[in-house]
Image 1 (spheres, rainbow, N blue to C red):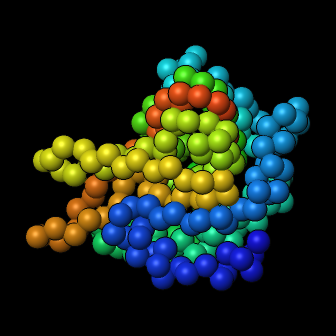
Image 2: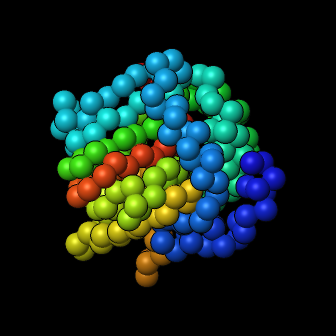
Length: 234
């Protein structure tokens, strides 16, 4: 996986993230890897927390947070993709004059999380059935955050499920929100802004807030896995 990630066209990915706030990577995971990740959902060990979404008015579905140590494939993705995203994240922070700088390696970044008592892994796997959905939200778990995250699509759109599109909104100051709707295929990955991205205006860069969610499934079952690069307080 490390070599496959290295061979991706990161210039194109950076361009997509910088201009749209998200970038799709087709077929990063094989069907066999998707099947192996789906199978993990039914294991009784390896998780630190299960969330029934309707109990918290987050939507309708269920997700589980992995515990450390993470499954090897997920650990490899989290570690190796971070190092390509850190330079992009630093450009975003510089454009917006936040004063935040992200280290080159994910290990160093987790040390910063730890210093702020954010030690709980945030990698999760999600499952939705017919009628399931996820309300628009941002995945922030403490003072320290990484501004880009990723979602892996483990089910086959149009075969395993219908509906359930991946939805993002972008809020431009003094304007209405823009909706973005994606239908990724099995094995695809989408990188996207965690909470905001810089957009260039007439007077320099401004902050465009972004949220993401899942539209209602009309048929079948949908599974994804999400990699958030910062850890959580709880």
